[in-house]
Image (tube, rainbow over all chains, first blue to last red):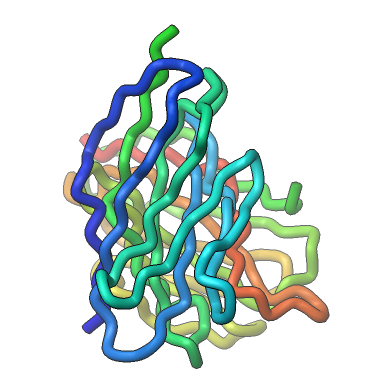
Length: 115
Length: 115
């Protein structure tokens, strides 16, 4: 069965500092991978996705993520965070021949930004 | 932003009472989903629909039923609410015309408290 692990429940970084949020997945074949962001009181919004090809994918709001098959990881990065990046971030994995009903979400990482 | 409206946004009810949450979309997307979000669990799929009157169970469907009589509306019903169903419920849609990106568009959530 597929699964997603986000090891960090809560991360605090200073505004302007770099950010890396970890995501590890378990899946038997090439997965489809996603990062979603949830601002307080809001629904989730897609940041970026990986289906195939270049393992470094760019998303909205200056985020990027790198797919590393050997490490079963899909970590999210941003070189310089802004106060507006404070939110909860969810990694998700799905099979390559899926419908969205097969998506599995991680438990989320809450990001706090300090001035 | 995708046109997704959830109602009610907040509800407090008592154990044993029936509750219906409504999701309304103006995007003519084929697929609609109900998730629940709980601390430490991320998002878990309750039920989903792949067309009018076509629905199926998700990961945590016990105690819930759904109906979809029109493309734009997807109802989630708790026949007899229990305290374990206290949660934030999210509706999501996908599968618009020409779209097969795996991207989900989420509503803003409905917070349900069962006393």
